[in-house]
Length: 177
Image 1 (cartoon, rainbow, N blue to C red):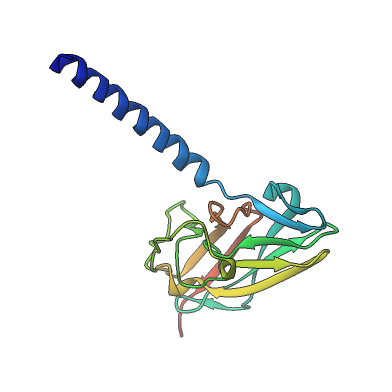
Image 2 (cartoon, one colour):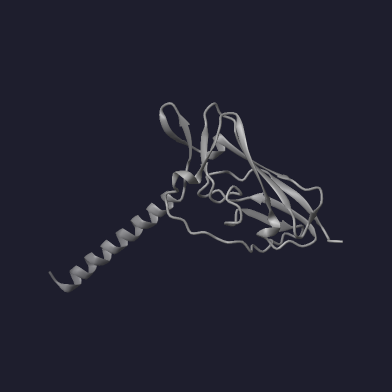
């Protein structure tokens, strides 16, 4: 075989392998929420199973303390599990909120980001019982640069957790006196 023919075959092989890797990575990053039922594990979409609800936990927020509650509810007849990565159930690790002031400027994220080994291990999952919910609270000021003013907060983690964004809340941050 000639050098040109071998070179052309190798180039085709590398292009095929690159395309396969991109396709595999795209499929791998979409983690379904898993229903634990009688017939084994059945993957269903998060929008059909679990819902996310944000709330404010503080009457008076300051630049050092902006309390937000995060509730995941299961409205089905079966227990459901989700990955806690990219959620407040793993606090101070990852950017899973969109925090914007009343002018639309996004608050700077100052928290830690994590690299993960896939797939998530069993201990990375939280089970939500049928017709039940799990709840946690987080202080946004620990991960975002917050000043006096009004902010909108939205959960945007999704990705690995499989949870949908849910509602958006407004919080007012008072100056310290």
